[in-house]
Image (cartoon, rainbow, N blue to C red; front, side, top):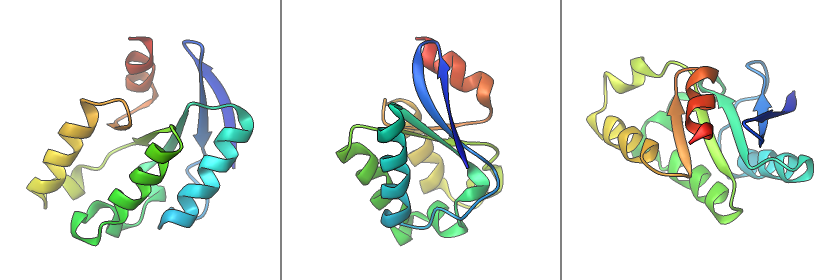
Length: 120
């Protein structure tokens, strides 16, 4: 289930914590289609909706998903605690740090952080 919200006048598609796992490009395209239809510029997906393989960069799942969002000019936010994944991968730590410095993919703890990022 999804809902469209405006945060600082930015249309954001918020995905529910419950729902099918986001496991690959097809799932990403479904979200992008829904977001485009509703006029969103960002899609926010709770971290628990991503399978563990998303956080293991060697699988390239994260890269493929992010690439689809970039191709369609849609931002992606992974929202929630990913500390258990970060503890086991310095490559993931680097990926998160680099992503959070850009305008395509953010890994954020909560909706408050999202509001702060969209304000600026």
